[in-house]
Length: 294
Length: 259
Image (cartoon, rainbow over all chains, first blue to last red; front, side, top):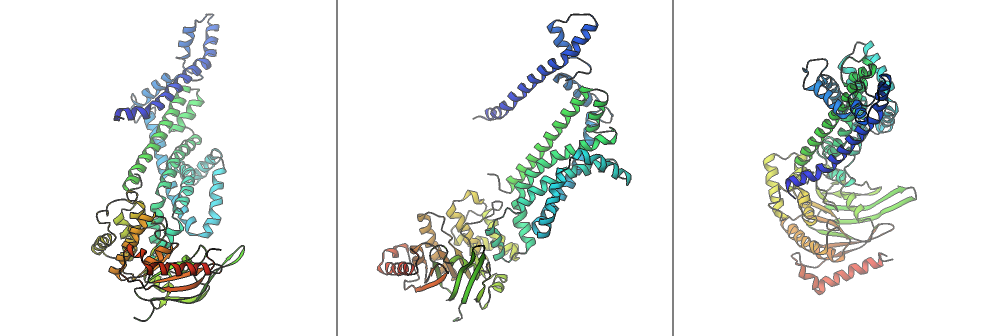
């Protein structure tokens, strides 16, 4: 297969689904927005033809479901046409969310790895910490987030950190679970072998356990970064809709700006996909350099 | 010189399980001298691997004792008195062949120049020169096992313990590796303890064959081989070879290996 052929082979299925989704989206937009269009026409005592109806559903100011091109226009307007420093710029809001996401992700990853090391090396921690780690994730984050924001605000911590804290809360979990599994990946034989060389436990950690855990770590990081973004957005909701993608979502829903909601939503999705793809890329490069990808 | 390198006195090991105690080893007495090639043969559950693991301080006996180079097994392990080759090659996939062989040297604190020198030497010894920069997945199973032997030879241990190292390989590769192992033994003058399931392998390689029997695991008979140290595969067709193989089989039968 030629290179172009290979690329087509990989992208064709994705494009197919994308076109299908857009078609469904347009159809749904027409169906959902038709009622409002007819209502308007009835009040103006007019009769709408089918093509008038369709074109009206595509161009409403506050549609129930905005059409894809309306969302695309809005995104274009608020990214390319606005200055990055403007409070109307989606890039500015996206960066606010992204910075909290990345900070929380870094904290979460560090916390997750440290907990995993503790769990693997200490029987007491293995017995005591893991149940709490699991319990922490059974509490709905939407219920916890406002309390975290309020409590941290009361002790004088506001802005980036509370949001990063919520990101951390969501992202450390997959890292703990993955790293416990990864650090335990070496089998009995490999551990015995280390023993025959009279290797210290820190040596076995750096030379055997940690490298063995790399594939598990990257799998966890991909889940963790997506969870981090969700955490940052959730953290922006109770702050009074000042800044960030979460704030755009909330402000949009206050004022019925569905197009704004959808454009923030798409933006968040694209951001999450890029972050996951970025980690996938780092994973590929790292494992390739380690000789673990053939 | 007359002091045995490995010596076991009344060694026994009982595992406590939910189904009651399992006597893995019972009253083992054995001396292994410097330069010996000793094979342990017997059916599954006769304790041959367990005995090797006791020598290596990977299991702790519940009775009797074992000395290695005149020290307790634990002291000998701390002093890195032996190289251990497991059934699977167990090479690290993220290290090259050279990197894998360097691993014990790094752990033991050899300097960089010495590491490179030793890796080069042992790779030559197992006829893997030129494969230093390859990753394990690029090598066949037999070559990987050779690399794992090289790794056990890389540091200064005069004892080599091998637990069915060729068990997972096909017979042709196995024959070839057996011949190579004998050459290597002649060149390095190591003392070798070798666990196997195969009668021809045990007879071909050993100066001393320890026949073991199960439930409880014990030594049934120790057969001294009178074959010359310098052997080729052709020796398998000789009368002497078949005599010894016959004695091993008789020993296994009398020790209820075939029940």
